[in-house]
Image 1 (cartoon, helix red, strand yellow):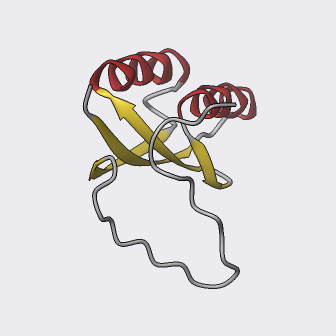
Image 2: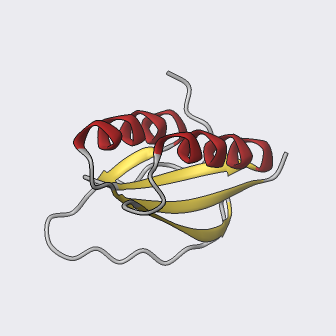
Length: 95
């Protein structure tokens, strides 16, 4: 199944919703910054992620931004300034 890489960032107004969104995001991707995650998702995972986030956020107060970085494994240009970070590897992780 084809997977795509997404950069997802959020700004959640309520602390309780923030914790719930954080748990959702941790289930689907790897944290790059406090509220920024890198996710490799299949079409089905993307649909499930959207449903999970939809159940948590308040559309009048919260914001979630998803940037499609293209197919998993495709060359994406990532520039870092300041303290370097280890970027997550492409593909599934076995824990």
